[in-house]
Image (cartoon, rainbow, N blue to C red; front, side, top):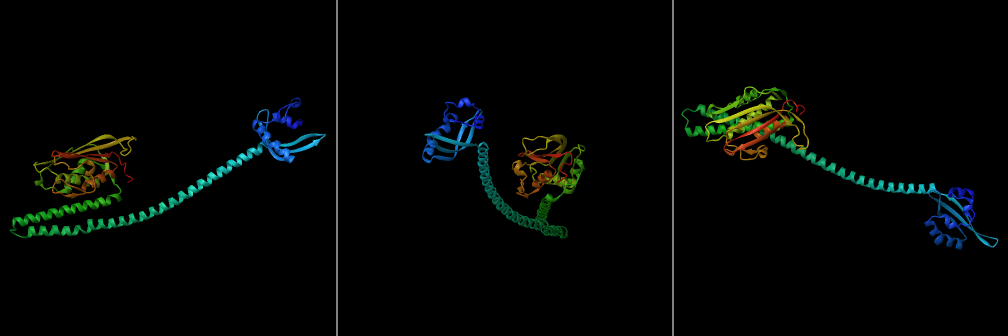
Amino acid sequence: MKMNNEMRIKLGIGSSDIIGSQFEDLLTVGSRIFLQTHFYPIIKMQKSAREIFLSFKGAADSIPVLLNVELQQREGQVEIHCVGMIISNRNRFEKELIEAKKAAQEALAENAELISVKTALQQHQQEMESQFRRLKSLKEQQQEIFKLITHDLQEPLRKAVFMSDSLLTGIHNIEKDIAAKLLKIISYNTQMREMLLTLQRFQELEKIKLNYSELKLPEIIAAAISNLNIPNDQNVIFTYAENGPSFYGDQQLLVHFFEELIRNSLENRDPAKEQLKIEISIIETQKNIYVESSDKYQYEKFVKINYTDNGAGFLTDSARMFQNIQKSVQFNKISIGMAFCKSIIEKHMGTIVAKSVRNAGGGYTIFLPFTNAGNSL
């Protein structure tokens, strides 16, 4: 076997190492098998071969070679002449091409998936747009109904109260039964007007921007009591401290808040008790500002207001107490006042919880931020 100097250098062998060696000794195991099963049979049949791939054993690693082979007769002997070209880069290029093709196929698959997702997203957006339009239409209708209820119905009620009062004061020696019925008409219509007014405030609350100022609880309670104009025969005793920590909030809304609490106490008073006692206290405390997130904590300064009465208590739990529509204990009256109260407190970024003991009274615990944390609402 003969070998040129270039090949010996590439394979890392000396000229003396070639003597007595066989061609197969230069090949890797896989190429030896290929040599016996394919290479020799092709040479014998075709007397030549082109671009035969074999791997030679190099000094450090295998060397891929592309061979062109000719079978020649010389002096009665058969010689195999091989011309080879190292194709290490070609293998690398082919591998890179295969990887690039695979990446391109994966990209096409991902692109098809993206197109599918985009199409689904567009359909979802169209559905959302349709739902938004329906909701907008329903909201406009709801606002018109609210307007009808809170504005247009108040005038007939006002006239009914005015006419009933005129009959009571204008007719001399009116029968007691008729007078009692007229008083009931006045009472029912007055209650209805109050409920409509609360409904109007409740509906407008979402659009209101809070007007923060420094407040004192006694001033808020005094204003609420004055606005309610409670008759003396109601026999209501209020107990609250004349001083206490100041805090920030919307004065008008918080006056409405205590009006609703007091009105609710009046409607749910215990008939067996001669006096209705209402106690209100306020202290400064610390509270976690994260209400819905159970794993987050940030304590800031709050005021804690406790409101209790000795009324009949509640027939429902705290969560249902603040639903939009509820019925009071007595007379099966319908009211949205407590839902309005809850919305006012939440508008201030506070919380309210109702507590009740049947036939022993009810109460509320209110937390309000000490500062104007909700001023952006």
